[in-house]
Each structure stands twice: as C-alpha cells, then as structure tokens.
Length: 491
Image 1 (cartoon, rainbow, N blue to C red):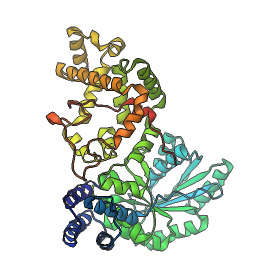
Image 2 (cartoon, rainbow, N blue to C red):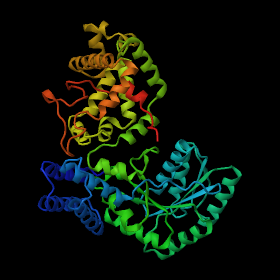
Image 3 (tube, rainbow, N blue to C red):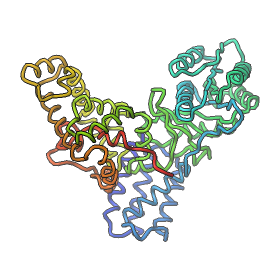
Image 4 (cartoon, one colour):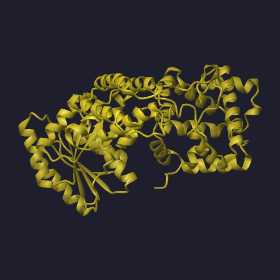
C-alpha cells in the first residue's frame, strides 16, 4: 500500500531537501508536485486542498524548528499533516460494555466482511485475550454462512448456527442469548453485503442496529475502489451510526487514497487494515506509523510488535544462549535455516525492509533481484543435508556436496554461496558477542545506511550487492539478538 505515493513523494521531497532555505518559490513548486502525487494516489479532492493549504501556511509561517535543516523542516510539517488527515492517534475498539460486546460489520458485496469477521475474532482472541463468538446474518448468500463456519473452525472460534430461512434479527438475538450462556466476551455479527441505493436492504440493517444496539458498527470497505470508498462510507453513515472503518485488501492497493481520505471526509476513524488473505493479516491502524511509512521513514514500532508476536521466542532464547556461550562459533546451518523461517513468518525480507528507517524503497529492489527465491534455495539445500552436516559443514567433501545439490535441485555454485553466507553470518555473531551485542545493534539502528537519508534515496553497497542479502558483501538473515531481544518500549 502507498507504494506509488511513497515513490512520488520521495522524489519530490528529495528535491527540496537540497535547498539551503525554504522560500515561497521552492515551497510552491514542491507543493504543486505533492498535490499531483496525492491526486494520482486517488485522495479525495477536498482532502488534497485542505492538506496542501495547511502545509503551505505552516511552511511559510513560524512553526518550524530551528534545529532542523530546511528539508527536514518541510518533511516534518508534511508528516504532521498526514497524521492530522488520517486521525491523530489509533482508536481502539470499545470493549468496555457489558458482555457480550456486540460488533456489527456492514458494507458492500465483496468487501471482505466475512473474512474480516474471522480476522477480528482471531485478533481479539490472541491479542486481547477475549472469548469470541461469531454469527452470520447473511441470509441472502448461503455460501457466507458456510464460509464463516469454516473460518471459525480454522481459528478455533465458536460460530452460532444460522440458515437462510431465518430472519437476520432472529438469528442475532439467538446468538446474543447463546453468547451470554457461554460467557463469551465478544459477539461478531457478519451481515449481508448491500448497496447504499438499495433502500429495503439499508432499512433492514438500520432496524437490526437499532434492535441489538452494538457497541461497535464497523464499515468494511475495499481500499481498491479508491475515492468511491469515501463516498460509500458517507452514504452508510447517513443511515447507520458507524463507529469506525476497516479498510480491506490494502496489500493490493498501491495508491492508498482511501486511507488518506475516509477519516477526513466521514469523521469516522479507520480502526483496522486488512493486509492479506490469511486470518492473521489484520493490523490496527496507527496514523503516525502510516505517515512514517509513506515518507519512507520506516515503522520500527510495528516491526517490534511483529517480532513480539511471530518470532519463536523459545528458539531465539536458545540460540542467544548458545551464541553467548560460544561467541558466535556455535552458529550452524540449522540456526541459519531457523533465521530464514523467522523472516518468512514476518512476511519476508521485503516486508521487514519496508519497516526499517530509510530502507522502505529496497523492497522493490529485493523483488527484482529474486531475493526470496534465493532464500528458498538456501533452505532447500540445508534441508538436503544430514543433521551432522548442518552442525559441522566443514565435513562437506565433493561427494557429499553432489548428493546435497542433487537432492535439493540446486547447483554446486548455490551450495558454495550458502556456505560463504554462513561463514559471514558466523563472523557477525562472533563480533556481536552473542546477547551482549543487542545494545550495540539497537544504538546502531539510527545510524544504519539510509536511516537519515531523504525519502526515496536508497543506500547501496560496494560491488553491486544489497546490504544483508544473499550474494552481497555483507551477511544476511535476521541476527538472533534482534529476534530474541526486541521488546516493547517502556511507556
């Protein structure tokens, strides 16, 4: 999401960052390009006008910090205004009501309501430790009832049974009664997709909302429909008392205009982003983090949270202890394979790079270089080895190497590259001194290549490689200290 906007804004803001001072002329020139970038990203025209006018007045006024250079001053103003447009801070769900807290999902056909219901149930169960029940009140699409039942089974959440010969209100009232008996904390209600121009269908969901009085009524909208998302949300809000918006399929929308428009136009906060098809692909919406991503500054907070949730802490702690005892020498090929698997669980190297300061533009370069395929080949090679060979690769002779490459469908060159990569990672672990190196790493994150570069300017490396990637001059993989040691910052 935001790839096109990030690229365009990056090039635009890079130009002004080279100026010695901010003037009316260079601000006006930059803002013309910012305006075009926002319009191309499908941001609603009233939002673009308000945003550009606000940035102009602040850039030409006295609201700039004297400690920053002109480019940084302007960038800070743009970032602050992006946050304002998208809604200052994250708005959590209201879960303080008497149980069961009812969450009603509404939206157009095909917006992803049923999948969102399952994602939300999993989110609340895993992160909020709530006991959740789901129910489908979509009596017009039998497949929706079956789909929700299947998803519920997949994520381990109870689904109240319903059928197409029932009335939606009767279904939901029965589900609420059952949720009380089972002491469920939250009941998520999936409803039928409907058009805002279908008066009968809109009247039905309006009556349903008034009867059950949900704590949250979330409007689920496909981000890929652009400005229409804003207009549709407004039409639904005229009928329903919406409390928030869930933008789905944002991983398929490179523009991001809906996210920048919907809060400003409707006044309703975006509460979640659907970022993929899997049931764990739901992110709380943080305007400040999104603004940081758009401007190529990374999103370290989200990276930390991803690490906290997805990294196998037991394995990471075991490895950190092993490295601390052996000063890096104990880092074998099984440990290296674990690092590749940890990266894959977090969306791959490209997803990680997007959240690193100054490195967001690298994800496209990674894709062009086929980095994920290289990691896959490396993992296949390691899987073709015996446990003894993984623990001690020095024993690999010619016949062993031929057996391994034939078993993994790779070449001797691929194996040689893997062994070289392993040696480099082993040296890095040794230099970091095991777990003690975590502090050094975190201090160094601010000084990593590109961390303070203007948006859109990517760090390179000598010899044409990319830092930290297979085939480059520096080691790849995620250092285990990063996986094991990252924790949530103190408030």
